[in-house]
Length: 251
Length: 251
DNA sequence: TATTCTTTCCGTATGGCCTACGGAAATGGG
DNA sequence: CCCATTTCCGTAGGCCATACGGAAAGAATA
Image (cartoon, rainbow over all chains, first blue to last red; front, side, top):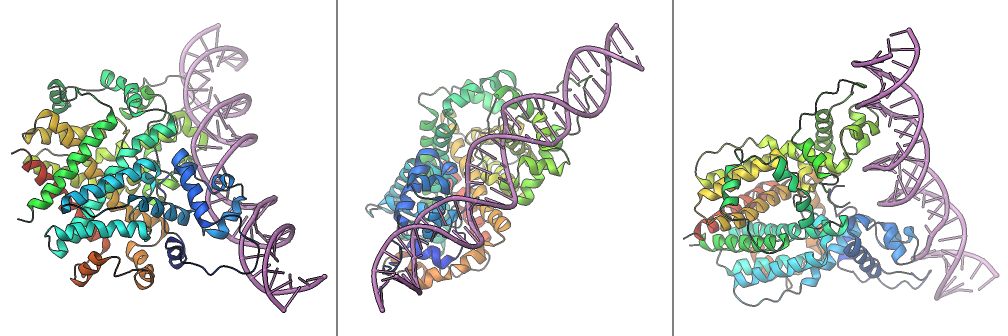
């Protein structure tokens, strides 16, 4: 299936939910069995355990021992529920503004990475039309403040912001993608690659791929550690080089 | 729905399809109404027009005026079909090895970006367990050859490779995400943001977000052009800074 | 020509998904 | 006790992937 999309219906209604606008307590009528917070928490729990694909309205309702359609009283639909889930887990980052601007960006990357690790379904959430809630906004402010301290021109700050934000989310997403697949399919990344040994035996053509062959012969792929370790190392390297470049471009 | 995953069943069967291992022509039996190539082409056409979510087996079969289950004679399942689609469009890149290593990486990024532009559903395809077909492998070889020419140590080449490859695919994916959403939902990115004007009016807190406010007041957001233009500019900037960093790290 | 063998085609059935609709049930106030 | 209000939720419609098994088509053989 295609990636989950957010931001469906009426923006005003969704924003009110994201910022938990205190609706005046109803004096009249039937008492609610569930709250928005309970629904969001249950949905996150299901997605954490079984992936976003398994997070159906029916499944969440079951978790709360409530009829499926009851959820629609509190939440406009599935897209908005995903918005709420996303902003909620982004709030877990607890960003502390300490150190140089570079240290703060690294801190932001670490905390964001931790969110993806704890909630691998974030990989499936598109961030191009993000939920404009406190979790997202606080993160944006944090990065913009750091970049503004770096000495870049205002216009350059906004450009660098998109690049950094994209890199961080992209890296975090890619990193957990493997874990999510491992959980969903029951096959680890290393096992998956192992099962494709056939490829190197039957299809890999040394003449067609000289650079790869040379690297292989140079021992570049003789390394310890799991696939996940390598990916993590590479992303760390990439962020450092990106920040190097941003720093160097100012002089 | 969660992102489409590939690489489902028997690796040997999938690899044979990806490399189009010439199966000896059947002398006996009923003549096939459709070929693997026709199925892949039709599937790509549907996904291009209506998104990967609309690319159902039934929809593809309908396109070919064939029964749904007939497809399963030629293709093991939907996951493998997506593998075939992915590798096929990656082959469209036609990478020409000219210029410095930096120019070649930029060329690779441009060509890959063009693939995503032409086939926005690529955003929904996970590349952590990619189809090991000619389209993917040729791209890997191209990038590795460029990085090997840069003077990096073999071990460093493999690390930089993951970072660059990840950045390029991430950037391309993010860039078309907006377009895909526009096509699927019928609402452009600019329209979407416009509808969320309410946010700035009712929820944005100047005290809570001083850096954003300062940038706004400095005119950093007073720019011409569409959202898509800005995103493109930022990714270009990001790749250049990443390559700057890689270049600088060698000295 | 009739039979047999091989291959492809595809109808049916199962069990899932989201959510529009409308009525039932619960609650507090008059 | 009644009624306005609010929440709960069963039903139903229209999607999806794919396992299974039999029908249909073509070529070789008798």
